[in-house]
Image: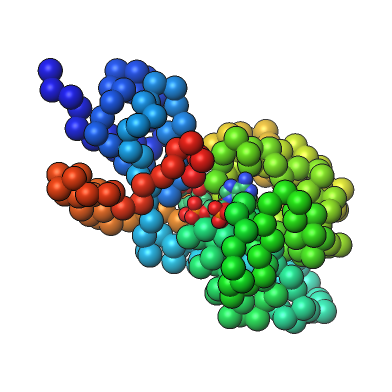
Length: 272
Ligand code: NDP
Ligand code: OXD
């Protein structure tokens, strides 16, 4: 029969790629492509991800919400409200709060810009050294300690790759500034979840907003559900608009037909 044309995939059964190992392209239906690191998919098949201003703005919305939620002590006030308690607390100025974003890619950059506009003192951590940008940038493993030491609200926007898997655990939490809080919107696999629960239970972390988990749905017996100061959402930080995805795929198929470079192609040997 004819060679399969393209595959559009979101957490597809890897068996698909055993049966159809050489499509002309694979389109991830999300920004992440970790679900496409599957044996059977040939190395030279182009893999494309979603890069879209609408998705980016949704992530900016969510991360801004999460940082403000933690910064403005909303879980404390929600608890007070449930007890009919009126208890104003000291509020630090945003300019005195150091936010650190792990992963300053398409999404991390945009989130950093908005948080800086709100007055937060923002820095980012990346893999590859880069020229100075609107926020302070720390690059590579050797700069991770300095980045963490300055960070009071840590935002994880890293992709799930062999290098980032299990990267955020007790060691990382121990290096953060006093009273640190955590936002995870990257991937659950980058976090050692029982060490996260421990850091929250012990008070090493003073709060968290968590959207992604090692196992999704988050199992009912996970301790994370019931920890005070922890807000959990079911992997909804930034959904993709189906019309936008369809349109991007159609335009990329047109490029494929014309023999042009695909937009949003991922280097799968790098993993993101
Ligand atoms: P990009 O590929 O544009 O950016 C990834 C960033 O991570 C880059 O800055 C990159 O560094 C950095 N990075 C990657 N590996 C390492 C490493 N080993 N050490 C240090 N930094 C590293 O991705 P996006 O910004 O578009 O998306 C990020 C992730 O967000 C996605 O992969 C996905 O997992 C997640 N996501 C979650 C959603 C949700 O609803 N919760 C929705 C959409 C995405 P460098 O700049 O040096 O390359
Ligand atoms: C994505 C996601 O990668 O929704 O787009 O997590």
